[in-house]
Image 1 (cartoon, rainbow, N blue to C red):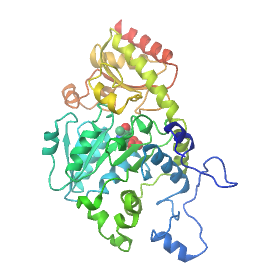
Image 2 (image 1 turned 90 degrees about the vertical axis):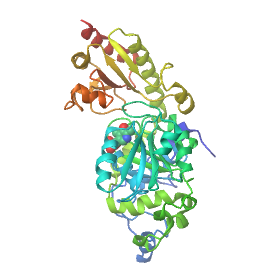
Image 3 (image 1 turned 45 degrees about the horizontal axis):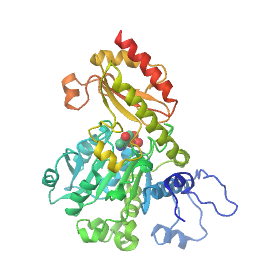
Image 4 (image 1 turned 120 degrees about the vertical axis):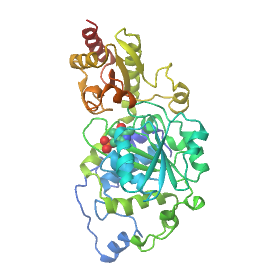
Length: 426
Ligand SMILES: *Cc1c(COP(=O)(O)O)cnc(C)c1O
């Protein structure tokens, strides 16, 4: 039987056998017992599936991985300790020193730091392209050493919508896969594999967890990229000396990428999630479909309210009919976009600070995408060391407020914003 995404949110993953717990248990054990050393040898050689050490795999994490793989329509997934670890491992699984990749210029700030600073120190170079650049400009960024293309379905915090199908086409014409960070819409609202993406990554710390209780990341393998035909990925098509000469593409077929990510990179880098966090993630995902629907409905109402308010200078929400990305939203996100809105408060930095300090329901938090409404004023918090000119260069105006709309009653969120905007208007 095949199920709809809403059913997969609730049911996919943990499948108890006769007499086992109905609810996913927390397998809080680093290690797993076997009756013969031969069997442990076979497990270590990847000849038989099974858990032996939680750095490599754990049954609680495996259940969360199976649920997201089912939701995305992938062949397998790897849970990581954070979203940053997922981005790092996804890139390192394709690129080594001397290699290059292309990324959309509209990315999460932490991802930009990882790509521009830390990967550079490892000898991996990135070129950023405007997500709205024409095909020939994207093509011009390719080099012989290019090994991947990376973008965010809806960028955090710019909220730009990524043209997945177009970037996939250009990436594939150059024999490399497309990686899409699907953190903001989640698989409930957009499934990048359906549009040609090859790998999906997540910060599960956001909507998948949904309650701001546990950090986590996911890498999902779509299983359709032909590593052999490309000829650019010897790490997948030639023997791995650290695994007795295993050739991942031969031994694991369509799951070669995700098996290598686990067997080689998770083994060596150790950015493994705790079983407790995997349990909390699984619990969060069981209501993902209900929460995303409500986040979107509330955000649409709030964005419409803000757009009409005289103390608000501009509103950026991809779900508004007048959004600059309306055509892309129609194609990729017909059921909704996300709960995050950016807007400007009349009066610039000082007014934005006064507005923030006047809020009663919406909390000031350096986080987005959880059940509670939260706000952030980058100019006075995360980006406070920058001058107004530097902020403008980063695409963050001094008046910009990032609002993460929660799943409370929309009328209460709007009433709170209204009273705080009235303070600013005085
Ligand atoms: C938060 C975030 C990340 C980083 O994830 P962490 O779980 O905080 O490490 C990566 N990508 C996007 C789009 C994010 O919003």
